[in-house]
Image (cartoon, rainbow, N blue to C red; front, top):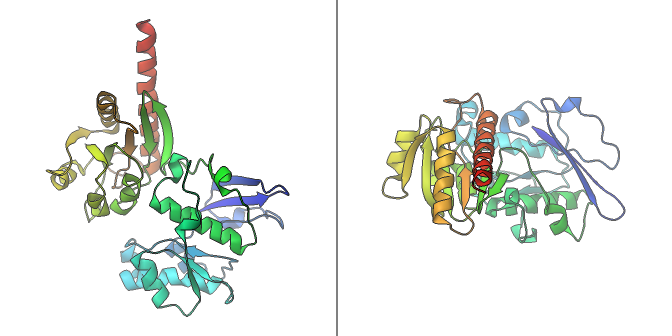
Length: 315
């Protein structure tokens, strides 16, 4: 779960503070002008019968945690519990995927579709690229509107948005190559979102495979020039990609990062991006996705430093 306080001063300037928390009850009261934003999982909705919300949105519903909820119908029903926390007069904002439509069809509560066209689409930072982030931005703007918070300058407020670590996190730009850490993408659905957000991708994928192998990611490879496979999923991912995208069986994240960077420099494509978006869990080689993302960051830092030393040696 995460929270973010949002406040606007008389000039419409927003102040954001973000932190990861383990218990929402540990939060201090942000005061009459503060807003607490909660990201709630289906399991958290299950155990929060006393939850009261001023506004809410369901961005998407894709198959996950089905074993906990006894299948797809139970999972959608768990998501539907968010309306129990909303005033009857407040619309529930919903996304445009099939899962959200299934949710809307079973609700008596009023719903309102999120309109991605209300979101700024130019000069966004890497962490906010992609169609899925257009939906995220539009949802945030709509939620704030329901709370009476508005501004005419969303673009400038978003231009320096950093986002949370390991979620399409920009790490570095080096010799014409961008490095993006999306270690949080532990399944094919999440990886597909990142793969649709950048051009000329050198993709690092793999780890402990999910049941659907690459899942939706197999249909999102148009911008992938080469894949670098790591961890337990290597052979299965290689079989899935065979004949579609060239790949290396890199083995570990350090080797994969170096191979991807070397290829990107050699090809010299505009917008070249080394993207860690594993489409798999991390537990085969790491304690969690955060540790995996840190190892990627460290690998990027190391190769940048190696290049820097080599360039100075040649002067």
